[in-house]
Structure formats: C-alpha cells, structure tokens
Amino acid sequence: MTSTYPVPAKPCEVCYEIKKSRFIGFAAFADTREHAMALLAERKQAYPDARHQCWAYQFGNPQSAASAAMSDDGEPSGTAGKPILNVLQHKNVGDVMIIVTRYFGGIKLGAGGLVRAYSAAAQMAMESLETQQQVAREQLQLSCGFAQEQLVRHWLSQHNGLVETINYREQVIMDVALPVECGALFRDYAASISGHIISDN
Image (cartoon, rainbow, N blue to C red; front, side):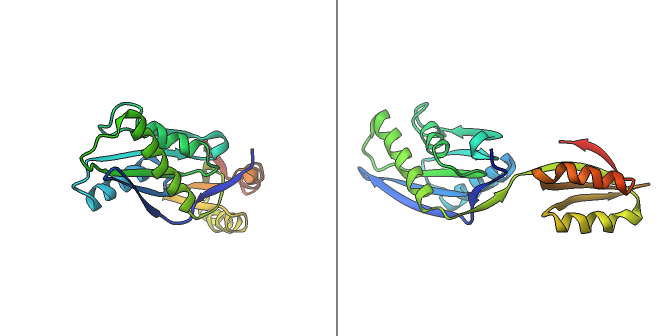
C-alpha cells in the first residue's frame, strides 16, 4: 500500500436531471466525520427546500479505507447512500465526501431508477473532481523540554511533518502528524534529544 493517495483538491458540483427530478452531486475533501457533517450542514443551508440530502464518505487511503459511512436520508433503504458509496469505493480517491441533493420532479423513479440516478450523480461528481496527492500521516504525542521545542519543529518542517496542538506544562506536550515512513526516524530523533513519545496512535 502506498503512503500517498489522491484526495480532492477543491469542491465540485454537478447536476443530473431525469424525469423532472434534479440530482445535484457535490464532492469535497473531508478527513473526519465532523468535517463531513459540517459540509452536509452547509449543503442543507444552501438547498433548504430539497427533499433529500443523501451522502457517503470514505476517509484515509482508498486502498484500505480507515472509515466509511452513508445515508439514504429518507429515500428507500439502499437506493441512495449505498450507490453513492459504491461509486466512491471504485475510485482511487481518499478523504472524500459526496452529497447528492435531490429535488423531486413529481414522477416516481422506482427503486432501480433511484439507484441509477444517485449512482450517475455521484459518478459525474467524481469525474469532475480535481485531485492532489495526500501524504498518509501518523499521529504521535511527544513530551520534551522547552529547549527542545524549536529543534522538534525544525525536524518536522524538514520531513513534511506538522505540529497539530501544543500544551505547555512542566514539559512541552506536542501532538504531531508526520508521514508514515518517517515514524521510526522521528522516534529515534526524539530519543536522541531526550524527548518521550507519550502516545502512539
């Protein structure tokens, strides 16, 4: 499994119409459930009169997704969320949320028609989506002395790592994220400056 994978570079929106029903497909970057639900809330605000807001997401490396979920949002079970997720699972893109907003046109599509329509809208969104490479990262928590903080920051900046949060107590407690392949190097470096890895996620 490669440590980098494609993720959405920017949100995209498409529209698919069939039998007067309008399906607005939207795809965007999301790497946590909170992030995905915030996108859903934005879509509901943008289309307050839509009958359904069906969605699916996939987080992490698409070759072995860390998390995936879906919702039919009131459509018959299995006719919306599952088709959207199926499209996602056949695309090599991670950290992605697809939301399909439906406006009912007065003509019932039937279960098979709904599956095809939600699949088509999701497919169109993914085909329109621009992607960029995402580095697979691991999270670590480090404790070090105040004098070592800048050394750690410098090391991370040279290895495509990030300081996510920092707390100053008797020691400096840093939550860091770094490329998976640099994990062992970082542990060795932390030990060399008398830092301690508190938790390994």
